[in-house]
Image (cartoon, rainbow, N blue to C red; front, side, top):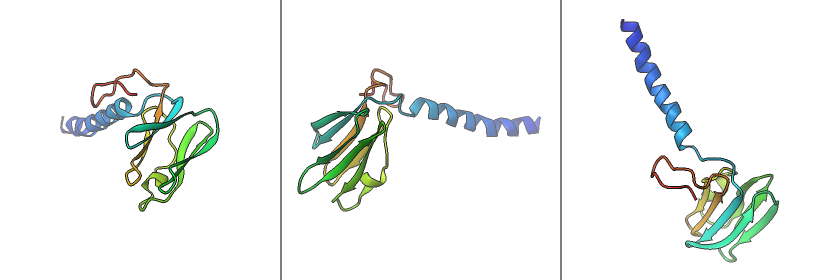
Length: 123
């Protein structure tokens, strides 16, 4: 009986982790890239149209939308966390540049689904 309990102690956390991963991951592929600066919307771009957008002037970020994904490829902020985030393509995924108060978020394709953490809808 001792070996079955050991197996249960190992498998139960793995099963719980797998279930949490499935519930908490972003929903489906997104349709738009929503860009906000300081909480105000500055752009909304379809993911299926390739383009490069410069956001800001003195404090700038370069957003590249290509092949159904979006990435900040260059910025003049100090830490470049936004650049290191890489590509996002699924609804709910975000790129954030705190120094420039920039949020790039994938929306659509998964709207209306329930967010397992807050119980609210994913926009």
